[in-house]
Amino acid sequence: MKFLAAVLMALMFFVPAEAKFKCETPNPTTEFEQMAFAPVYPTYSWAPVVGAEFYQIQVLDSRGKIVRDMPNTEALSYMTEQKPFVEVGEYFWRVRAVDKNKKPLSDWSERKYFSVTAPVTFAALGDSITHGGANFIPAGQLSCQWETFCEIPVKNIGRSGDTTAMMIERFESDVLPFQPEVLLIIGGVNDIRGGASAEEVIANLEILCEKCLANGITPYLGTLTPMNAKIISGRGINLTDRDWKSERAKVNRWILENGGFDFAAGLEDNSGELRAVFTPDGLHQNLRGKMIMGRNVEKFLEAKGYVRTDG
Image (cartoon, rainbow, N blue to C red):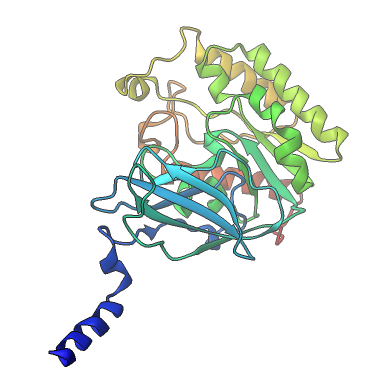
């Protein structure tokens, strides 16, 4: 009996770690390691875990110090940073399933690494069109970002939901730490769909260009991408009563007349709306749309004499 008790006791110490928890360990799905640059606002994602109530995400620095500790109380299988990563360094993130009291329901996932470097040669300031993602895939994967399809590496300083006024507000905090030589400014879609006039958008874009020039940065404006009103309304979202097509056209005409580039080239149908084959939700582009936008950026930069760099 003593021998049997000893064997049982020994087996207890060798129980696999996952057996101590109710849920399997989450499997991260981000692809930061394969990106030229990690986004300033990273989106962490993982495969959903059966039985998980919520999730907890941690970001640690190269010394193992926790620098971000974020509960995902919506029980989604992704989370986007609300605070930018602008400090140069090496980081890794991990996730685990937890209950409403943050009690672990699973072990921590494997560590997924990303780095923050500065200065950079090219960066893009914008909204969700620049940040990536949509309602079909989180923004931490290669296929959801147009930057993936531009052979010239571009630092992603996009933030979902931004208007041009919000881009102005975060210029110093989010752009200047990276000291870009060239800044692509791609914003205004959220302004227009919210009812702003072309004149308001143009005024804000001028301010952004002035800020760039005052800091030794070369700014290039990209045209506003189109929307598909029918698909958007089908999701229960109403666009502004203002003629958004006309306002968008005014902004885009001004951009092209002032040395900007046609970021949206190839996305419109004959009625001036976003072609249905390029969007899952009427606003964001799918893989095919992102490929077009990335190549539009690449062609423009090459035409300006820029070549591929390592940053």
